Image (cartoon, rainbow, N blue to C red; front, top):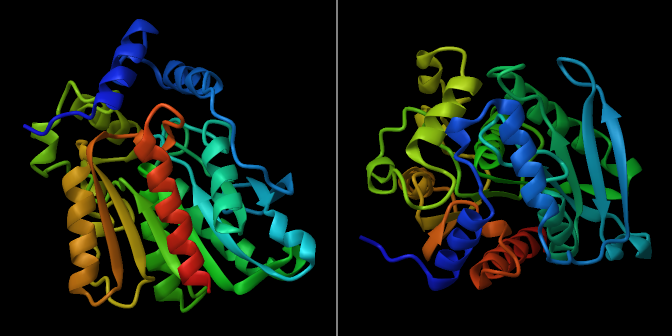
Length: 315
C-alpha cells in the first residue's frame, strides 16, 4: 500500500486530537459547522490581494453570491485575466469562507481576478442546482469582464473536489455553448464519476483522512436526486460522450485518496480526446491536502503549480 507522507501523518494525528468527527456521522448542518471551524483554525497567512468585494448576481434559482478578489496587477489599470472558482465540500458543505485562503492565494499567485461562487448545495438544493448556478456565474463573469477590469478573452475555471467537478462540467458546457472560450480548467482531486466504482474507493476506503468511502456515499446521497443521476455527465463528467474541444487542463491528484483513480482517469480521457493536459500526482498526500498550508509542503507546491499553469495559459 502507498505510504502516507510524514507531514500528512502529523496532520491526521492533530485532527484526531482535535476530535474531528467523521462526516458520515453528522447532519449536513453539523458537517458544515465542523468545516467552518476547521477553516477558522488555520494558522496560515494568505498572499496579499488588492481588494475584495461581494456581489449578488442573477441566478437560475435566485441571486448567487460571488466573492471577487482583485490582484495587485489590477491597480495598473490594464485588464487582468479572470478565474471563476468553485469551492469543494461534496456539493453539501464548504463555503466562500472555508476556501477564502485558497482563493486569495490563487488571485495573488496567478495575478488574476478570482470570482469565488457561492453555488446552491444539497440537500436543500439537489442536482443540478449547483451546476446551473456555476455556469450562470461563469457566463456573468464573461459578460461583465470589462466592468470588472478583466479581460474576457483570458478566462479560466478552477475547483477542488466537488468544485473541480463543477469546473469540469462548466468547461464542457462552455464548449457546447460556444462561449466563453476558456484558456484553462484547473481540477484539483476532482469528482468525475459519482458511480464510485473506481478501485481507489476500496484501496483508500478508510484511514486516509476525512474523505472516506462512507463520506462520499453521504455526499452523493445528499447531492443527487436519484441513483441514476450518477450516469448524467453533469454529475459525472467522465460519462460525457465526447471530451474533445474542451479547455486545456491541469489535473492534480493525491495518491492516497478515494478520488485518485477518477482524477487520473479523467486526465487520461481528456488526453485521449486530444485535449492538452498537465497531470500531477502528489505521493503520500490525502484528499484536501491542497489547503493544508503551512503544515504540508506539497500544499503550497501544488498551489504554485496551479498558479504557473494559469500564467502560461493567460500569456
